[in-house]
Length: 387
Image (cartoon, rainbow, N blue to C red):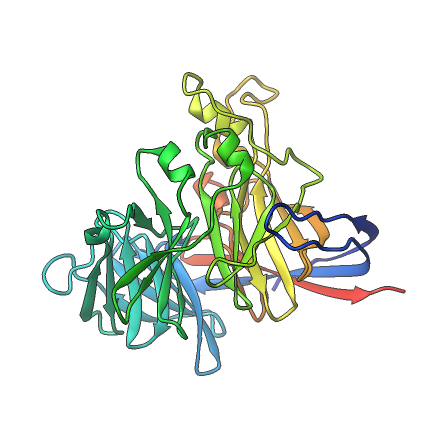
């Protein structure tokens, strides 16, 4: 087990302003000491397993913690016991017939008899059990022509999330191929599995998105998390974090600025090189809640020149990755530049041990990695109020 501990002291004041239709919040002076260590999970895998994951869900069962992810190598859901660091179960999925699952883009493990799998390609939600038997299918695409409803999507930016109390599954709502219409529409839709009804929540894109008509190139999507009985959403093209209740009301905004990078993606000209624009601009990812330590986390990509010092073109894998740690009022506690070319974006989750992230970027860059294992780093934060 590797463990490196860093101690960071700081005192700062942050003013938070709330915008239209949002509650005012008072600025706070936060005196906090934050420390963290880095642990490593090494999970043995075979040659038919992926050592990184993008379609996954973390869950607890019988006092143990698990990671379930879609393994495209063998078209299966692989379940890892994070406590024992072993693959505990493999659910082989069929591709055709009544139990057919094709092109999944999001998975949610509710319990052993209720595993939800969604596909953006046909907008179909399947409900299956640990044996891979599909016993309920919902065709959400059939609702598109009703009430001006667009496409319901779920993926690494906006994984589907389920509220057991209401029976609502939350999705990203867009009008595919029509950015202006998407920008003027709700970004969050719910599908109720009890009555098969789709509802659009009163959550819109930010004023910045509306002013620029959503023209941010690769980075115009929204992100969503559900935590502490509220919706937490943000946008790839700006640093701000927004909250609302589960019905989309009582909205608040938090600036959540980075001290290392630009805090807004520049407007994109359709005639310019899209990859160059993406390299030269930041991208802000989904906010994660840590209920064990009462913190929030947000990763984001930094902005770098299109060419490096040697004149070679940078790629998205070369973009620096930053982690911002917030308290539960979204005051910035710390911002950390992560080790370069180490982590696979979109592979982060929180469990009782800490903030987990897969070291797959190093593998994708063909670095010298040990075969036959999946490596997950666990960032373990502790905070202490100072006088």
